Image (cartoon, rainbow, N blue to C red; front, top):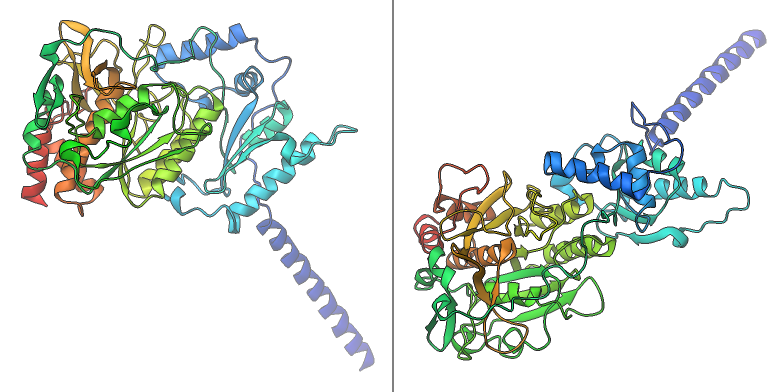
Length: 513
């Protein structure tokens, strides 16, 4: 009997031990937060590519495809671009095997749960790898640029090719990209900030009560006719740009001047620098086109002259090249997304390089119901061969470009398959005579062109439409704009549905919603 009892105890012990090991194995499997991809890349050998060679690789891709994505380059090219820039790296993270999180990124909580676990494991891995070298003592704050509290993005300063390769080989890393790489032969300073010095032509505007000037091209979009029905009251447009002028009172103390005296509000914020105001005139022009008051000061009126304005400065100019500008624009999208009063966003800035950071920001705001109009791109001598820039090319944005009176592409505008709408904003015979908007100061209008101007105008038109039926959905708003546009129901291969028709769109909204 004792022998049988002893045997039973042994059997139970073995079974219990086996069960424990099985549970521990399952536990270990569940705790494998970081998972390597099935076909990992090798660590780059030798030295990084020099700047000349790297630039050739990047520019060649842009020229051949009119597009560039960091995910498409090999590890050596990626590592070289990080080394040859300010060494800032954006890491978009997620749980392994989570798939595409674009449509649900606005629901992610990075402060708890599985996203927090991935974040913490990545942090642990990064510090362990950096401190493998004898005597190394790297702290998190030594490499941290931004640990986004809303979106699953880490921005760090890294150059170690072994660590970078390990990160890129993880299923948990949605993207790994340099934030500041820019080719040497592409000018990256001051773009879009200087303003036009071309003398004002009297045939490029008409004067309406109570003394405001209407830009000539507003008639091409039937905007004055739309004003008989809607002026944008009750809607707030969010503009993300490079700064406002402190000297333009029509976007400040005189925002409710003239026929715009409806108690609408103007507010400002910034995600770059220390103020919403700087010397770049571009933001002033964009806000002027979208919402400038129908004033008695002899200045130009905006499209939606009874709509409110929330402005966020997120850049130094219109080219999102610096790492700080991409981060700031992403953060501006987050802020706009979280504002219940902002229904429409206008962004007249961009970059030719695909950016996971910009996409995450745009997806976040789009998922929260914001209608985002983004410039397809405005060329200078060094960008004439680019297609639609980012973030306009992403599906979360509505890409807008400008055309001449005769319908051809304007001299400085980009177009392509991602374009949804166009706006007439350039005289056929004179590329210097564009649309008109507020100058940095005073009431004398200034010319402003490119897809930037078309985008701000389109945002204003959308506000006129939305104002007629404020409860309509984003999809219904898009139907109003699309079904009344120039080429509907066909879509042009490079100009989308063509010119917007403000009057037809507001009447479509009234009739159908």
